[in-house]
Picture 1 (cartoon, rainbow, N blue to C red):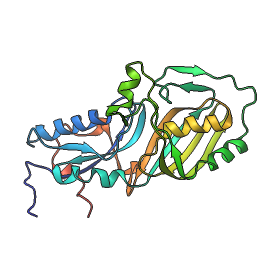
Picture 2: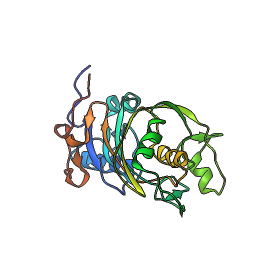
Picture 3: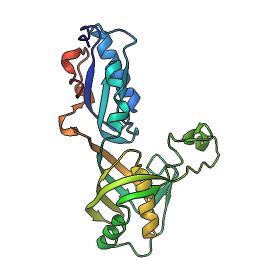
Picture 4: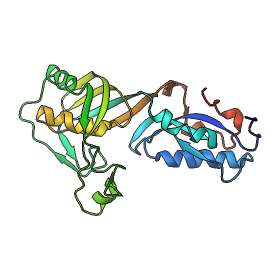
Length: 239
């Protein structure tokens, strides 16, 4: 394959996405910076796995057609997250986007009980995606159905949770370190963990730290990205 011309950069960019922007907001910002430096206006820019607006951390941005074709391969890689679970509330979205409902927990679970409950979710499990998610039900996105006032119930599907460690706990919040495979929803894990404990269960904070070989420690902050980007700002496509 001949080398891509300088006007059509190809490669990867690791971005530490802050809370607020969508994953596609980040892609649009990268595209604008590439175009300012001379890239074609229609240059393809995608990503290897969505991060919700309320989540932060590693986003693998894919630049150019050869890179965007790797999206499924990168998304299939093992992922690591630091997740904070609120055991005193439930949410229609399973995170703090809401609406949020308080839950009266008469006897808060101990740290040992939370660890025991976490252990039940390690391995291949059946997990129902959140009602507010991009999975399709009858050809429509679940979140579109939910926003239209309907009550979508995505079917449970098998996902792999490699490990869950309780890093810190003081009721009502527990901080988890999660390693998982493709398709696992940490929002669903927070919801189901609370149900197993007989408490509330929603995600109050989420940070992705790794996707396959890529780590957030090697990523650039979104605000630190240059206004003009060329191929020199990109990582090569992994072989």
